[in-house]
Length: 134
Image (tube, rainbow, N blue to C red; front, side, top):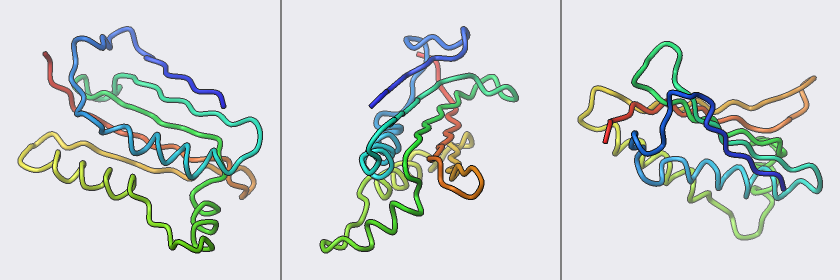
């Protein structure tokens, strides 16, 4: 499996900004467990950080895999005898709800099913994270 982390913008200094603990982890976990582990070859996962072009106080974290896609993964999990329920998905949703309480700067998330000619080509998660300075 190929794994890359890229800090895409010279304006992002990792020691300067705070990102909430374990915010990104559930999405990376899902990409690996549900997208890439079901694929035999050419498994890739990219995590990139950049500044939002339209907002200076927002970091954009993109988690992208070239796995089997959410639809196929759900189909596989429906057929499992243990009636699998994704902990990481629920944990991520709960974290977002808690972090977004009592704040005007909301963390946003978009989950995109990537397809080429209607064939699943992976999943992309885009997190828009308002940051606070140290």
